[in-house]
Image (cartoon, rainbow, N blue to C red; front, top):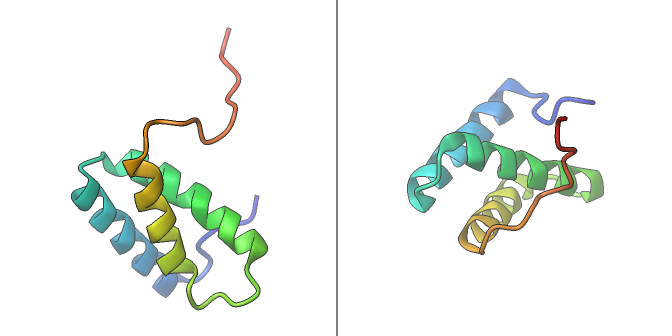
Length: 79
């Protein structure tokens, strides 16, 4: 799987956005990071213009964390 955050400068911006979302929403950083990276990967796969990916990832993460819990994707249950 390719890295979502290739550029170190962009990585810092995304991590700062995740930290701010964790504080704003009251969720643990690990949960915010999981949701944010899911949304970021989705956006990067579809993006033709990448300038607003950080903003859109933050917005979608915030919206997802405010809604009732829904699974991000199916996870196999370990036996």
